[in-house]
Picture (cartoon, rainbow, N blue to C red):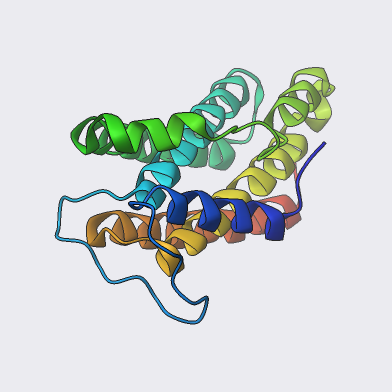
Length: 191
């Protein structure tokens, strides 16, 4: 069962506040104070862990897509997504290691199930007839990347680490641009 995005964001915010040292939560209208660069709070670690898991799913979708799609523009997009997200994943994993065991524990306590419909999308993509693969890939990947952009926007609003919020801003922009490009590719006549 997939959680509504609003519930996901509430979980993200609650888990992050709970992992920040046990103080009382800040009022919803206030923005957390930025942490010293390099410091990763519970909410930052949670976002990083969620995005690493999400990126693994993206890379799996991309791998299946590269094996099946025929449109050269879609293949180019998939190659670019693979390069970008492989690099981002390495960065996020490094920051999680730097954050230490307490931040990693916050991330580990969070159940990532239900944040994505990647498994269903992958099943659709694998089962799609050859003539429909490009269209199905664009649909599956666009939905997946919209979720990434939404998670990134939530991190920008709630995160405490300036570098993690900067990464989240870039993730939001890149995934939003990818979704726009996929919409154009999906609307283009296929020959």
